[in-house]
Image (cartoon, rainbow, N blue to C red; front, side, top):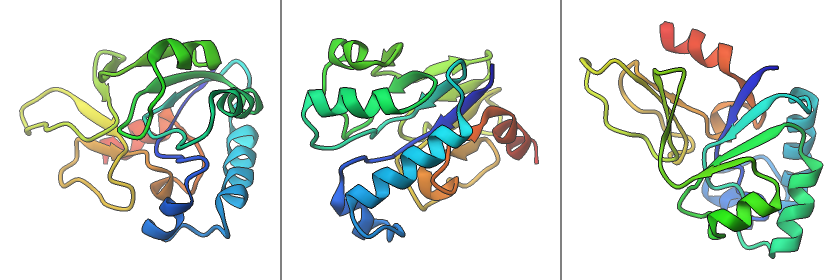
Amino acid sequence: MKRFFISDTHFNDEDIIKYENRPFIDAENMEIVLVHNWNKTVRERDQIFVLGDFVRGLPVHKIKELLAKLKGRKYLIIGNHDNQTISDYLRLGFELVSKYPIIVDDFYICSHAPIYLNDHMPYANIHGHIHSKQMVGGNYFNASVEQINYTPINFDEIKKALRK
């Protein structure tokens, strides 16, 4: 079993293509590419942490269909555009849903938006929310799709990047 991270997929969001200059014709094309990249990377038994802003404006039954297409054991940290209830997301296919950051391996704070860390704190922050931008300092990893080639990133690659 491997662990992967991704943030800010914004499935069904036409506006994000324009706002972030994403290389897609429309939301349907973006979904095709994101689903393909996800499924070529993640296996059914792998864990994948979705760090918020998973989908925008889809009815519940369509979210369920989308989640069923995506491989892996899916965990969601709710972002500012995730508008369903925790119980809805669990019923739709996420195994874990949190509206608060979670800590993985006693060191990695996983959140939607970046969390302030000073140089003396013994943590690193894996986050999304800021899309094409980067936080200053070595304790942050931005898992927004714009930063990871629209493909879930292996946790080992994140750890390696944070060690640099």
